[in-house]
Image 1 (cartoon, rainbow, N blue to C red):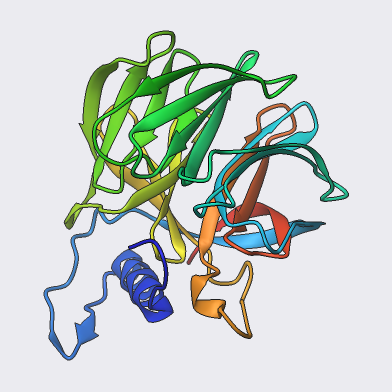
Image 2: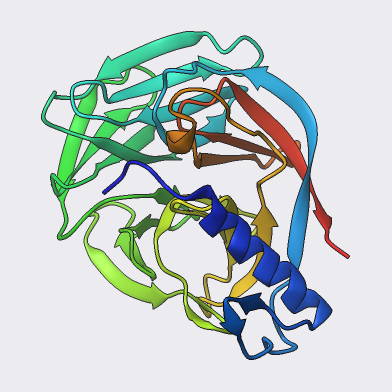
Length: 271
């Protein structure tokens, strides 16, 4: 189910991770064993800038290139692919997906944009300049997040496993199990390749993982709880889901489902 979450679950994980850095024990009803000393560090977010964002966009994928954001949105009958002005939030180009498709993660490679679908088992390939569909491919299971590392596509499917896809044929070439010191990290969602590492939203929590693409180990956690605090009707659905990176100016952008803003952030290691 892709709707609803207990925000406290994300807060519990972040609290656990922060205490792990300090070497403290965590208590949750009953006493648990203290985590190992090699727990990944936790990073807080400092908001550098805030940019407008369509608060009705059910964001499932985000990418940045040539000064603009590219966004994939979800929901049956409302899924889109968009090119969005960063500073204005204006939708410059938009394409509606078939009404029976639930749009998911997107990624860019050269002159192509690729967009996954949730349970339909099909990915769409578009011309980046025109949004004309120029191809499609099939995959088993669900599609969640997608990124491109310069040589291959990296896909998440809601489990603790990442899939590697051939850059041209989209055939699966390998898999990688993601884990931290406690074990598998489930519900990997929206992905972004950032300076040799994979950043991943964890559904439905307010935390993102920084993953080694060589070992699958979580090298760090990003606490997203202070970036944006949703209120009002439907607040429980407004979870983080959207990471984009500007490799030229080294800018990191974060947004979420139904968020009114995209946030440029910097990471600060928690003490």
